[in-house]
Image 1 (cartoon, rainbow, N blue to C red):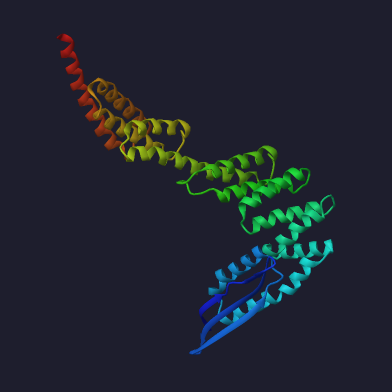
Image 2 (cartoon, rainbow, N blue to C red):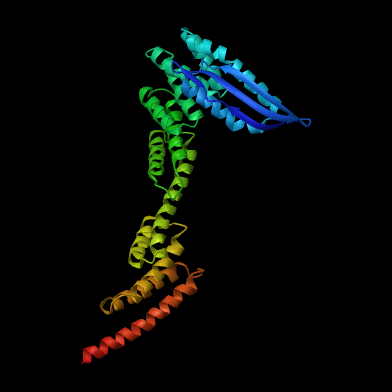
Length: 336
């Protein structure tokens, strides 16, 4: 086994919109001896962006090969440039499509994309147009360019609305938005877009074999929105903004009545309501302490065995004492 010590791809020389040359240098140790490898490759068949994709893939994966496999792979890939160059320069539409399909079927999407992009214009209005556009949209999905894949998949469903592939494309467009949906702590615009797109798919294809998958994805995305809403409300409680917390937590329970966070949210309402009442001016304290007792009873009835019940009862008992004191004071003042 040979161990790669260093691997470097030189900055390619650029000319006429193409990478003309790239230099690869590798140093490795084998049987205790240090070896060096240098190779100069012409890349004049690669357009700029696809050369970059190729270089990135080599850099990302070289660590997993021993040096022999690495060098063989590099030599094989780069020697294939002449064949790829032949495909790019060909004026035979059927030949170009056949090769693009081969690259697509072999998951070499970065190779199929530039050919298919050219074929879109060349096959417009022909029988090949639908096949070309489908492979083009799916290739974007294959390279995980989800923004462009979403756009081209949805465009396919509009352009070829009667195609049997429209169902798959509409579902995959929603899948793109699902992949773009970020962590719950970030902006959830893409999450809502994904839910809308899955719902559009279900409305258009209610009997689809993919309906269970769509419903499952909607459920997962909805749980993310639910957690986002709860965390937003919880932050008010955490930062001691008790009035805002009480309002936000009640809104959360109204919007998500079956939430897994409902128990904790109802407890926090009791706690925040008490803390708000405790810090209130005398004119508002009586009303707010009564609200503590009301919220506690609602919570205790809904979750009689809750782990938060003991703490909630403490706030309730404190509020009861405060109510007795406030009521006594109010009675004395009325007698005067």
